[in-house]
Length: 208
Image (cartoon, rainbow, N blue to C red; front, side, top):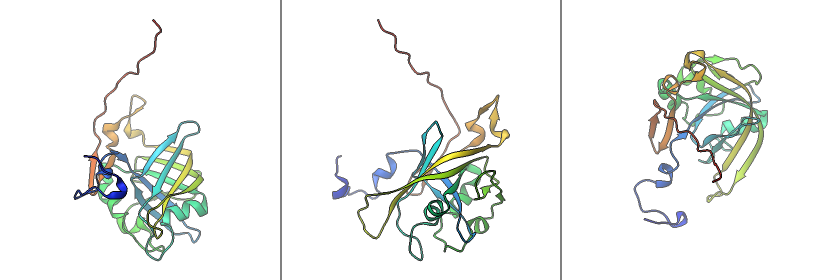
């Protein structure tokens, strides 16, 4: 089949959500100017550079309750900091629970029963139960085109200034994906549990 997104696809679910997969989940913790902590998952998330290490997350589902940008975006923009916590199989229910559209003065750490751990460089707390955390300073916030003027497509970029790795997920000095068991987003309500990895060596060009 072929379709133009502007014309619709005619399928029960939007196939675009299932085509760029699996998408890593950026479980973003921030703190507002009023000192309220926020935690929310974003499946439009990825690493975008090595040196210095940089990541991005995007909010694409419009405004939250009470109007304005989503808390994570607003806090990362205003305070200039955020933390990426790795979403794992063991934390799947808490990750999903933190996606609720709670009011600005509600702390998602509390409603899903997670423990806060102090960050080393930035202000927002980390999810203590998560095995990996990326402490980030916001570098850019970009507004992308949007079909509905009532919604927002906003991308937050951040430079990773601190990395925490639980040594229990290391095997012979390497991060072991089988121990991590990260989860990824597929589409709609579908996710994937990553338990296996395989190696493919890159070819080396040799002139003949």
